[in-house]
Image (cartoon, rainbow, N blue to C red; front, top):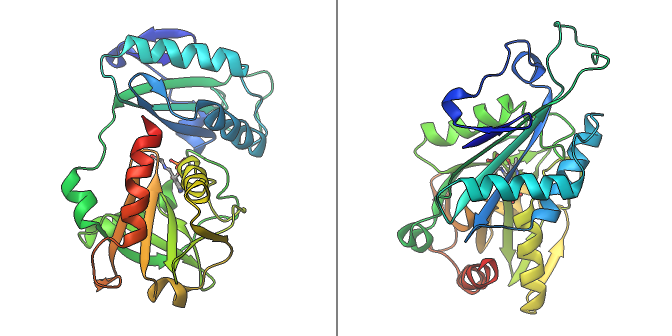
Length: 276
Ligand code: PDD
């Protein structure tokens, strides 16, 4: 079951006009919310980020926070799986093609739920390989925009190389992954890039920093140079769907000894406990 503009229906019945500005311009924003045992994870935080994204594209929020909570709860109940990946998206609606905002047009609101596929124990144990690339996206990467062509092209570089993700570097500094945030461990300190306009403020990113503080790990939020990335003791990637994974190879080079490091081994169970 999906949700489209006030109605729940099977996905096969869902239709959006071709003049939707999401289709024509990529003019919209989205969220991906993991659902564990039918409980949306960090829902208020996701809705806050949605508001930030809507403000960023100057689109009025079609629902109050309480309405979103109710609609999302209903969609979760109408789907079978206990653990779901909930996708929601709002576009500027349907209008004759013109770059300027159309006056008086209702936004399109779409939500769907898919089974949440988390990482296998083998993947958690082995870690993943990533490739690096120059971050050639725009300067509002803090907006979770549905216009994802740069991210699509950057992620495909990883797929083409048989890797899991593309790590992005802008002006010699780490920003994030094509669809994830990246953490670095150096000298037993957990480093994270600052939440600025060059990266998406990840909900998982916040959880990791909170768990690290609770476990009295040393953390630093600051710019991280390419050199620091390439000589790190550990690299991690985080996202709502990947949770936290160790990066064990970067551009075919092993990260330290090429196996998940001690801080990852400490953090992974903390995250698993926290989410349940
Ligand atoms: N992507 N950075 C980018 C560019 C992302 O697309 C994502 C998530 C993240 C991690 O954010 P969070 O922890 O809130 O999931 C960082 C989602 C999962 C996606 O596009 O499917």
